[in-house]
Length: 211
Image (tube, rainbow, N blue to C red; front, side, top):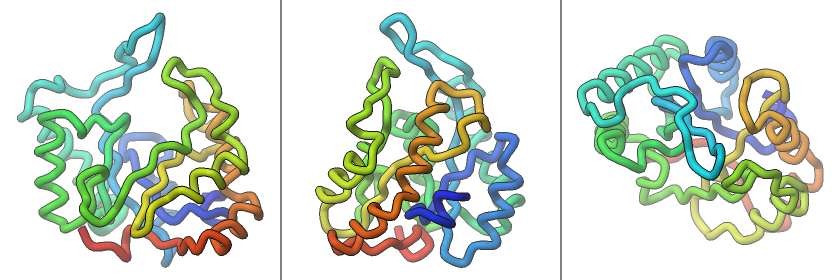
């Protein structure tokens, strides 16, 4: 919320089964210039001892019918919480880059005529603003005002989605807890807002973009 009120955040993706979902949806409904999308959550993997291990899985990822049912359930919860369709779609840890999630979410995106991350011809995704390396080590060169400005300066023309994970450091149990708070401070830094003008970047939300 702080990153939107005082920073450059214009859209968020809602994980509808998390404990803060009701509060987040309520906030989103009250903001005229803020978009809420669905962040499909089917599982999470953590990097341990040189390989990715499952932290949790909600469904069998190889069972298309089960995956489709879970996505439909999460969409139904989203519609109930927010009161309208999502403005965009993506997934936790980009799980929709693999089948069967990809095909299912492409159908949902076509149904609502909204962008699906990585598959929209209009919106380019940039995931460089992430403060950890693959093994989960801090990448200080990214999580700084100068690091964000370097990313903003190189964004191509057109619509760009810059991925970020801001949040209070103690609100969730995750390996990215400390970095989340750092992101809030960076996104709200006055130098970042000034840089948008210098780089001729105009903020907008997903609600202004067709699929």
